[in-house]
Amino acid sequence: MKEFQEIARWLENRGAIHSIPRVETLPAPKFMMNGVEHVSFSTNNYLGLASHPRMIAKAREGLERYGVGNCESRLLGGDLEIYDALERKLAEAKGKDCALLFATGYLTNLGVLSSLVKTAQFARIYGYRAKARHSYAFFSDEFNHVSIREGIRLSGADRLSFRHLDLNHLDSLLKASEASTKIIVTDGVFSQDGDIAPLPELLQVAERHDAMVYVDDAHGTGVLGASGGGITEHFGVSSERLICMGTLSKAYGAIGGFVATDRHIGEILRLTCSAYGFTSTLPPDQVYAISEAMDIVKDEPERRRRLWENQRYFVESMAGLPYRLVSTATPIVPVLIGDEVLTGRLSDLLQAEGLHVDSVKFPAVAKNRGRLRVILNAGHTREQIDRLVAVFRVRAIASSCHEFEDFSAERIGSGGQHPRGLDTALA
Ligand code: PMP
Image (cartoon, rainbow, N blue to C red; front, side):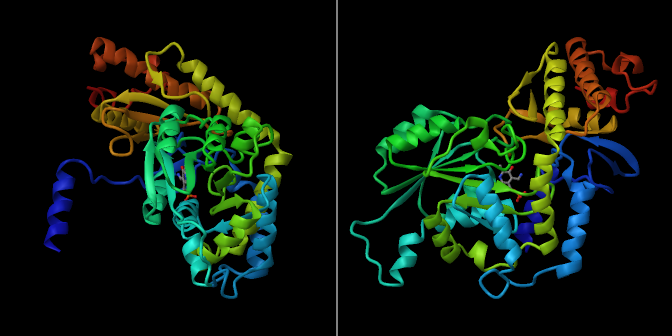
């Protein structure tokens, strides 16, 4: 007990324990926080579907038909036919034989990655004896989401990390490995950097080494590709080597995760993956809403068009300013600041202007690679994006001449009010 108290105090003194902003309404992308209206540049509700009237109506239908929760796991009496219908729809959307639903995306990665490697061990219970000794190894991009890293760790299999997007490094690690099953794991869109994994090339590397590729398409599903089909549609690739994971909590505006695979892997996962079979299922109203979200993405392509127009508008508006954008390939456009303290201060400054942007700092990214992770949204207006860019512009001018207090309200374009906190927020 004492140790927790001591460490908590130590962390608190170093600013590692800080309060998390409490919000009163959901970002659409406007939201209320501390009684003040803010604009979110951090929500994953890319297309604004979380509050779409069709989604709400469908969720209501699900609620009325089934009630609030299932209170059962899939393997023990909770296998409603609506789960199966949604899994078939997701599998078809990803061009795979089958899909499995999970309560969250996090749980999907944790469950699937940790249990894939237990296949032979599971079969041994039934007397299966492999002809040769089986061994598994994961090859994971160093910037993969934490749920991937934890899933791999939990598996107990060999884990090798390759430098971000470095196919030569990956190739050399694969060459040196003697594992009988090799699984390359990558985010589709990297959540902290916004860049896209080179899936066609990864599949070529996998082909050369007889490996599989597991792609986490959390930020691509509903966003990338001509019809929002995700990273595979974006690149026009399909492969039996590919396992596609995705979340339902981002562009689809609900909650949950899924994995889409070939038939054999799907069948095995249903048996071996306890995060699928031994936990309570998604509430039925969410299943109704997710299915509707998939239809809306197709029926209303203008949402995706607006998202990408906003993304381009922001990138073009930042072009003349002295910032490095970590990537400009997706609606996640992180603005590199570097120093952690400065990153935090700029985030506070944006907050004071009613603009919510996540500041991403060590340990989420490497030291001195602090960034403001701007996430564009279909619902942003030009005026909202202009306001965001104006703060970056003022901060750039302020850092170059060190006369922070002199900046007038006009320069930031904040409608005649002095930008709150500007003088204290910068150093
Ligand atoms: N993978 C990636 C790449 C993510 O960014 C996230 C969530 N931020 C997840 C998985 C987890 O998804 P969920 O929030 O649905 O649990």
